[in-house]
Image (tube, rainbow, N blue to C red; front, side):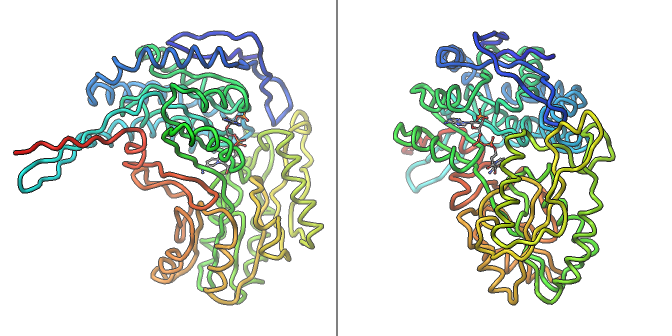
Length: 477
Ligand code: NAP
């Protein structure tokens, strides 16, 4: 049993009430974590405020050095990150190693390196020079979800602190263990006290208190669209700098010239990676009528062969969903799909697993066809191992179908004609589109959604811009 504490002002501190943390693959209680209240958040904000001046007065190079130290120390604990992330989320350990652990280290290393040139910009006039400098915003409130816990937390903490801000972060209470590991690493490397504070607890309590705190100047939130609205309702009238990275219902467009043998494993990955619990997952697959039968036969055969089970086994392609409540939600969408006339081509049920996984929140990967592309199942975010298949006649129809939801996060196009693929991508109303690949990430590029998928952009220089305040100093010659 692990005991998680808040990390405030460089110390691990207990709070009065605790919450149980459950391993969703077995139903066992694995940790107790703080249920922080307003006074606990207050202490963290006070620590962040006290550390603010000395941290922002360090040079950019000194702060970059701290990120390097954190990256190196995290890297030496990569296997611990993978094990804890798999235990906490139910995801396969091979995924936690390749994605969560690797990317968390990479986030610190990337922002340490990439920020080195983000110092000053100059704009010359005939008789004056404008010097644009980048100041810290102040205290950054960082709120993150459970699907990629340390991956997303480090994606925010690294640019926030390298630009001179101090941080109060609240991870999801469903997956607190790797945030706790990061606190240990930060403690071990000796980062100045108060620069990073981690407060555990419930969203409507600790999270809401951070968002509403008058001394927190900036909010970076990643989570669901409904929660994002609540965060915006609180933060916007307080004129806080705000970034909202929200949900998605991403379309995968398969054109009739796609090379199905190479595309299908990748399209399957885009639908079911992390049990379909990635905001970028392609959960609506739009298929040219010309290849509909061939695609379905090959795709369903592939998905049926995916192995669901013990997350610690390298054999498992899918692990457990993050919680029993979340599996209930996903199953309710499978029932809705049936009521909407959908035909389940594979999955749709819980797998038969041996003890202790018979008590876990597992679900077989599910493929559904025969649904109207505007049905609720096909337009609402399910965030689980469920994809729907829809035929189209023409490129125009595919684009119209891709754009028919309120979301606008990501998409992918599969074709042998790269010019055609790029042309279609330009017409998709999302923040990012991949052609013949998916979740192929260069950390320099912009990341963010349009429509109900969010406000603001992070990634590369967009993160550095968001976590800093540009100030223009115009000097007359
Ligand atoms: P969520 O329920 O919206 O929660 C996200 C975080 O916000 C959690 O830490 C949550 O705490 C906290 N929270 C809840 N209510 C709050 C409030 N009133 N004020 C401040 N914080 C509050 O989302 P989730 O279920 O954890 O994550 C799944 C969603 O995240 C999906 O919609 C997915 O698409 C989205 N997502 C988006 C991206 C992206 O980059 N666009 C990436 C990953 C995930 P509790 O856990 O205690 O409720």
